[in-house]
Length: 290
Image (cartoon, rainbow, N blue to C red; front, side):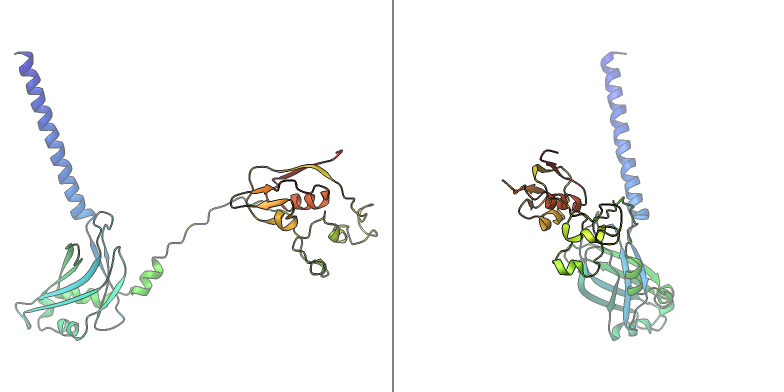
């Protein structure tokens, strides 16, 4: 047998196999769409006797549309009336949404049809714009039972549908650079941050106030100093604390903080206060003759 004939046979076998794989994939996809991923209709308890409550669950990503009408068809060949249709349009929704649609007195006539239990009820929900619809068939007995016995209302469904995100643990550093106001000191100096390096609050951090309490020298006045350089390392969270303390030096911008050009560097205590007040400790400075 020649090489060309063998190659042709192999090509035919590969083509047949490829077609077979495509056919099998299509069958599996069709099975999935029809039986696994098919639309489902859940009845919800209506508030009014002439209303129909429901939620239509379908794959909105695969079949995007605005569901904006409901149609109830009654096929009752052995009863009276033998045929009845109720059509109701509404605002519509693009994803599964619990609804209650008022159908008026026609719905009460629909339910009271003679021979209703042995009839066929078809529910059609669809989009008048896209021309897509879903149909669900029930016996009259099943329809009435589902409509009467369901206990979950639209409001109940909405409560159950609220997604509660799980708590994610974060390591939040706890800093003690802020103290609770004491003896109206904060109000008296019109300040928000109570920091040990701020001369206005020395008494609060001296172990009882003044020079009489705490360790030796704790109540002594802090001596101001000048700095040769002040800078901000990466990691600023733009909390505005430094600018509130010393706006002449620090400028908080949209995503970080910068040191202003030619800042005053003679008030080292105030720069130190801003550094102490930084939650992420990115403010650094160098004292003169340190």
